[in-house]
Amino acid sequence: MPPETPAGLALLLISGSHERAHYAFVLASGAAALGRKVVLFATNGGCHALCADWSGLEDAGRDGRVRMRGVAGLEELREAARELGVRLIACEAGLRAGDIPMAALWPGVELAGVATFLEAARACQMLSL
Image (cartoon, rainbow, N blue to C red; front, side, top):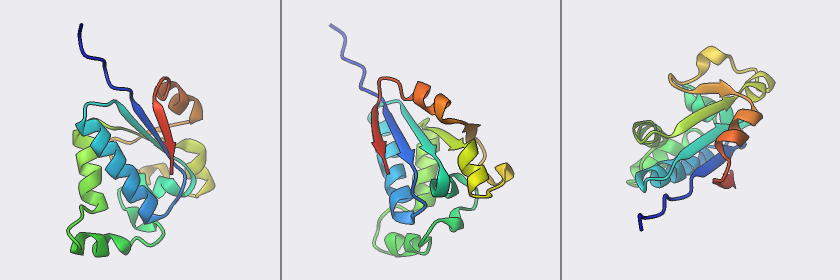
């Protein structure tokens, strides 16, 4: 009998804090490295994590402290997630609510709504940060 395909992981990033965005990418890249299908949907303050310049995250300076302690920073984790095929979706309404222009998004980030996320998350384990 063939091995079971691992359940996908759907991450909902609502918070705009560096700590939660950082861990969302830890989980996303870790799950993708284990062969799981991963979708990360960011809305509200979490949209800053999907911007090319993520310095709009609350306590963005935390990244330097994390990296000084030998932990991968947000930029490394984002690149790992991209290389591992994590699907990144920014909420269109979340961008509008936060007055974040679509042009600010990191290249390759999709723009969609909650219905797209829920369809992508079908039959996935779902976590909210």
